[in-house]
Amino acid sequence: MILLSIETSCDETAVSIVKRVRGKNIRFEVLSHKILSQVDLHAAYGGVFPALAKREHAKALTQLIAESLEEADLLTERTNTYHLPSSSRKKLETLLEREGEMLSAMKILFEGVQKPLIDGIAVTEGPGLEPALWVGINAALAMHLVWDLPIYPINHMEGHIVAGALSCIDNVYEVSTLNFPACALLISGGHTELVRISKLRSYKVIGRTRDDAIGEAYDKVARMLSLPYPGGPEISRLAERSRKEGLIVDDELRLPRPMLHSGDLSFSFSGLKTAVLTRIKKRGPLTEITKQMIALEFENAVTDVLVAKTKQAMYETRANTLIVGGGVSANTHIRFSLKELAESESFDLFVPDKSLSTDNGIMIAACGLLHIANDISPKVKLKANGSWSVEDC
Ligand code: KG4
Ligand code: ZN
Image (cartoon, rainbow, N blue to C red; front, side, top):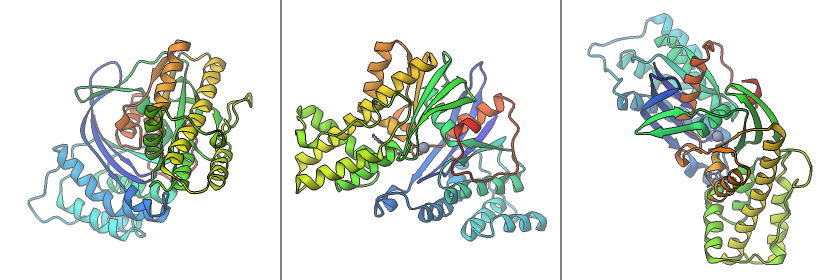
């Protein structure tokens, strides 16, 4: 079983090709893994600009698919001239009528290479930026149309959950055996959620942010500190430096821990962002030391809240396992703090390898294999769903 996966929900165009390896658990080998990041382009806007994201995905995706097939040794060029049958060509033209550039690239691909020996496509259908999601979905539909490949639509947040549960030895990945019930803490640019997991594929959102996502807060605070996009790694770097130097945060730069005592599992980060702005305005010119103090205090504030809410969620759900996922899970301090919590509360902790924390195709492919193992039927009618909850996937 060989699956090709596509991820275009935000600002990374990612394609992976994986091959299922026999065994009880879901195990697979990665034949190809490619990620094209658009961060340098979006940096000028201080955040992801949807129309630009869509355009860049459309420009890059077909080539990335071809390169992935080649890397996986699945690309056979045709030796004779071949033209798509007119019915397929017309359907393809209708499907991609608003994606002129991708249509030309896809035609060249379909006419230039033979149908590859893959068994299906896993593609992110949501949540995310809808114009960006449509690019991946349309590419998958085009491959369904011409190569008759089944499509498994994947929820991006389930992708982050499964990424957290993956272990890897010698390029063979495996979905770890988990001690259920479990909780997932999903922390990314678009989400901050606590999810109860009775078993994989059965998810219930038990807490979420009322306003900004944590990654969004990182990115906005970074912008206030004149740090480049994406701000998460930049703030983390400054905060780590402050910790190493034993820097003490001035009282006037102390920040609140929003929702810490709300008693429920909700988060809120927009007030924290405003609090940072107020401190900056009061403080005057932003020196390097002030930036370091704010980065440290901000990171400590969000971590305190994440740890407290996660602890509460673990109690309330009697969970034995915590899975952490999403771009912000790459953060060193948050990882360390959750590890301390897991040790003191004696639960199993799964965090993704740093390379799988941010958006990637491996997590989408792994979900595809999970769906197949659970006999979930492929779909032919797909629709980008920007706000698709993991609960409904
Ligand atoms: O999951 P992801 O790649 O994309 C979404 O699905 O949103 O997450 C991207 C987010 C960005 O907000 C970025 O600033 C944040 O993850 N991020 C981090 C770190 N690395 C990425 N935040 C804090 N610390 C990091 N090391
Ligand atoms: Zn993500």
